[in-house]
Image 1 (tube, rainbow, N blue to C red):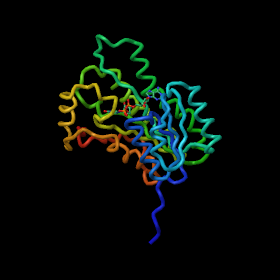
Image 2 (image 1 turned 90 degrees about the vertical axis):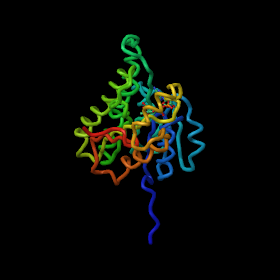
Image 3 (image 1 turned 90 degrees about the horizontal axis):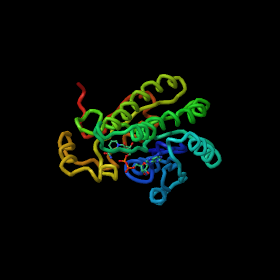
Image 4 (image 1 turned 180 degrees about the horizontal axis):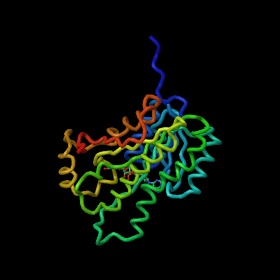
Length: 248
Ligand SMILES: NC(=O)c1ccc[n+]([C@@H]2O[C@H](COP(=O)([O-])OP(=O)(O)OC[C@H]3O[C@@H](n4cnc5c(N)ncnc54)[C@H](O)[C@@H]3O)[C@@H](O)[C@H]2O)c1
């Protein structure tokens, strides 16, 4: 029997927010499937790079900056020759009920959590079209279906991700490019570390699988959507949430 070829061998994958949390787990999963990893974060992702056996490249940058995306692209061009997979994972969250939410935090949240996905598409769709192959996997959140106060800005950004994915999928459908969203459950990362334990417990108790998700629980679905095997799946929003989000 032939040995199985790693599913992402030869692919170059950008993961944003790769220094820790869900982004780090996604980067490790894609690397274990044979991809060359580009670790983009505001912080230098040395910890993640150390855990990767194969090739990786650390690039610091702000995903809400168009010039930073141009620099990221140029750096990848000179090291790896191009980009096949973009995982838009970097994100911020904060709890602010509408009375306390100001326009600056609203804009910052929309800019990092949503506008960055548009900037990445503007930067990488042309080369993916030329190659006739590409994958965008954009991280949304299952919180869009939960009744948690203080999340209007965050939920707007994460719903926006789904709208953007649905629209972009149509624009690139005939170029071998797929675009999908993954909606993680509440997950054990720095983003949720200050959330009261009671709120976390109440949230995961609403799942069919009653435990707090770990970053590695999210990574497998992202790797699948970024693979050749998922070539007929596009424009979808896939909950990876232990069975919390119910179709209604
Ligand atoms: N943790 C959860 O419960 C949960 C649930 C659903 C969705 N998500 C989403 O998953 C993604 C990852 O979240 P996490 O829990 O791993 O968070 P985290 O705070 O642990 O990690 C986020 C990473 O993104 C980086 N980052 C932030 N702003 C950036 C910017 N402007 N440019 C580049 N990098 C930036 C940070 O430096 C950090 O390394 C986010 O989009 C988040 O909204 C998280």
